[in-house]
Image (cartoon, rainbow, N blue to C red):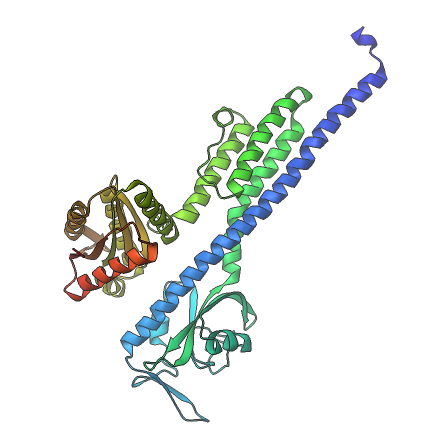
Length: 435
């Protein structure tokens, strides 16, 4: 009977098979596009925020270094041949300090007096510094006139598109006297995003190809697997990076299992990029801030105790200046590893910015937390670090404060910062607590 099967029925069966395959491929392709767009949006938002923090930090560093190296107010002398002073130092054509600030980074810095570019690390195609030029009218209006720092992701200078951050500069009398501009090439940021989207795109394409090649008997199984994978993709696209892929898919020894494992790797990569500091591989500031909020919330609801400390590596700039930025990076990594191991089971540590670290002691009374912190300080002081054949030692200063149930992140951080300032101003290499 099977051999005498009506040809029309056979044609109908093939048509159903093709229709089923088509019904799988179309939504899969659409889903892939949606996921790519979601990831692209998520990545851009995350990267924009990270770049903004990076540029803001650099702007603060530049302003602080300028104040430290050249104490005094900004002043202008002359009208036709304008000379700008910082204290007693002439800024015009004085590029040593700003060149040193951006050395080893992919950033550029410009100092403005009012809306006039005075000194800058930017150069044109002929190697000439881009100075004595007026700021864009929009920047002048939104930064100088409104007195607000601003971040832009589409500033064009000399034909190049940049991410830009403008921070207001004040004289000692509180008058807005200018601004500092920190730039990062938009091309580099875009390339960074594209490179990280390629694995997502590759995984999606592989899934479509695999589905197209399977035989009719496997379609229903693939539909079920793809639905579970689609659910996982959607979960990840919403920022839930701790969710687990179904183990029955992960353990498959075929391409589908490989695709699921790629999703897991992608989750880990995204989580590391969003939550971990790229250099030290400990919690970044964003993650540390989030975890601190969770700690405070638990303290309010469960009555648990916590303590917050801010630590700063002593004379870190001198290490960079003496041994180079690679040595500075090695010091940061070494200190971060000690802090991570020391805080294991006691709370968490995050890189708070530059050579600063946030330590949060959880479910521990304040006196015990202070003792632990002093022990950590001693461990760091005893550590030896080999740099280019030279062995050096570093110390840290810490400020620690008792957590309160009415605390918010900024309040408890401010108290810890005040204790850190006391530790720095009273000799460094010590722990100051607000008993």
